[in-house]
Length: 553
Ligand SMILES: Nc1ncnc2c1ncn2[C@@H]1O[C@H](COP(=O)(O)OP(=O)(O)OP(=O)(O)O)[C@@H](O)[C@H]1O
Ligand SMILES: [Mg+2]
Ligand SMILES: [Mg+2]
Image (cartoon, rainbow, N blue to C red; front, top):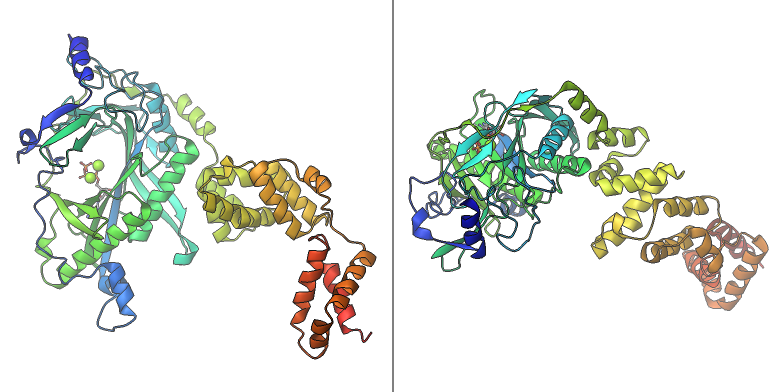
């Protein structure tokens, strides 16, 4: 019966739902569109966007900076993050999920919630949950269970989401990070309240006319981890840095691609403000719909300013527990739906799935198998003597960090390797929109290049040329040097001959130099370097050039 129904539905590909079926106020707390017309009264009138305030403050003393607006108040921020796991198959069935697949092509009776089907837990979900929980320094629950979180929404085929409620797989962890140097730096620790496993829902595609919606269930049943933070962040910047560190962690661990644009990492931020010195928290507002860290930071700063302004205007009763959306186009948050107290999801234990039992030995083995994590990497790089800016850059991206580590294994000096990677290599990658593992340059050849410059075999200038050839075509430094005859000229006689030739070819400039225009030394040096095809040893060149310029002959 289930499979017949499944075939029938699948063959239609997209299921059409007339909008009015769902346009009921008593429906789910997740009905995004049904309350979207309710806007908070134009609180934002008379309120300036934080960046507007900043821009104008330099011209006018009457406008306040965000810091001035916060004066006397403290912002409290907590973040819920949904991490989509990169398992081959879904959480409770054998369907694969590939972002961008045509609608309703990666579905089966189980993830469609057809009657008579039963979920079977994908053990990989537990493996990845344990990995992330350990990396977040959490306490693991030796026995946890799944629960049904019930609500009605057209993209939720079963009418409930399999999630974890009172006994999540992990609790009480923390994340440590370094704030960017340009924002004053500093080391921070943010608490993690819980990590729990759950399944994703499908997706609704609304027609332009708004008269119907299409349902795509490809994403239904895809495994997620929800990571809930303690309300430990105090600014948009700290929140964005927390989320970026979480992204780094999932990428280092390989538990998710962490891609925000594709929705593999989704953050909901909770923001409240309270007068400084007050111990109770203020009413929190949840913001959704931020698809970059920068948008997250701006959305939070806007929301903080909006709430502080309401306090200052004696309208704090207008700060209500609600969900707001970040409107990128308008750079402001707007009411999406009001929460009337705690939503009643009528949680109860999932009867179709057994408890999840973790053995100590399994936990220990997983702990041992964890790779070096971002925080450990940063501390190791710091001990090598790299400055914090280098440390943050190199450890930011796992593929860059691995390339750097590997270059050091081939004998390169840390600071020199860091300079090449952060300088010419990073600039090239940025220009070409490439990742470091997408170019032909290998860590071994970068180490060889650095060694060749250090030993004086080639000049730094030639080194750059070879670098770009290695990036584009690959090959070996040694072979390129021989093939193109690039060995540095260190023969003083040969360099002296070039200096003499260039000076004799530029009598006017030589006269001007001797007349006091000493800046021309650079001009001569450039001419000689060019004559040597970039091969003259710069130190010897400059030494001999100075001697010749300053001798009376
Ligand atoms: N007053 C507050 N100000 C800012 N953040 C808060 C405040 N109180 C709680 N938080 C944060 O809000 C988040 C609450 O997430 P949680 O998943 O526990 O509940 P929820 O948002 O009510 O439920 P749901 O999962 O259905 O969205 C946590 O990150 C917590 O740290
Ligand atoms: Mg939550
Ligand atoms: Mg929430």
